[in-house]
Image (cartoon, rainbow, N blue to C red; front, side, top):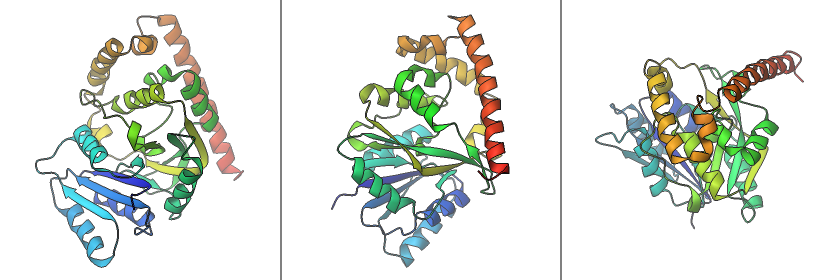
Length: 282
């Protein structure tokens, strides 16, 4: 029987993250999921850990060591190609389900929406490196409103979150653009939105995303981030003329200045709101 859900994990030198994911995916032998790990690491730590799990448990877990390493975006595309499930979840090693019931609850949700929707959007919960819950990425209704009505805005602000927040029907999941490094996820989200408006938003399903890791790819890119970001915005403004308002700030400086002020105020208010909710445990 083909899997309902393929959980795709691109690994790279972060054993703790892989351990955390596989622990939270218990029971790993759920008959309707497959787990595929493609490993770009320059050491064998993750390989040894996955082999240990496979040796001691019967589960649908496939592991492949990329020699030589493929690089992040090529690895993601290889995982998409290898998957056999009806729906795909690309789960990076610094993201993880928040509960061990994640698989069963997700399968139940997918079965209830499978004929009506192509994309399932989950809540993104930001956590510390110690696993402590910080706050949601953004208010749920705000994310839904932007994606439904102003999808080009995601080139300005990634209101969706990491790829782990989306579960996408395999038949429409596009390949990631290998010309991109930083805006590669939002560009894929935009193409998905162009393909289908059948997006389902679930507040009940949550995915944790670790922030503040000193050894993350984002942190290590900080010195070249401005240059990469500028180059990719130029590339995308040529590819998507409809999105140029947000990709080229010089095109409409007043619009972008007003948006910056709005965004600062909006983020301050939402962060204060989440802190208030946490303080009083509302």
